[in-house]
Image 1 (spheres, rainbow, N blue to C red):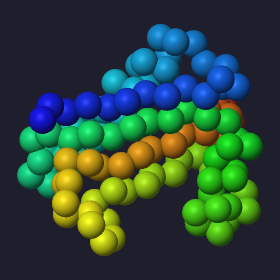
Image 2: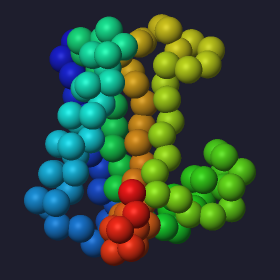
Image 3: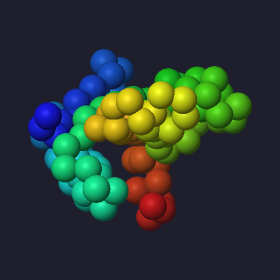
Length: 108
């Protein structure tokens, strides 16, 4: 298996294609480094760029936090059955709205 990162940009997100691809390359670089550190030469992950309303719903439904956030990560290797396909790392969801707000304020 080769390494891959699938990129999904929700329709309502206003982000230039080159910027989305650049972000995907940076996230892929970080995921690759983490996978290699954990001893995995190959991995599969996904990156979703969305808005505050969508990430708010995900944060509420999966973390019981009724507010938007900047990033959510859903690990596939944790929990029952996680060892069956260790190359499946999981999903990263980024709110472009919150990321922009934080960038303007100089927050990380």
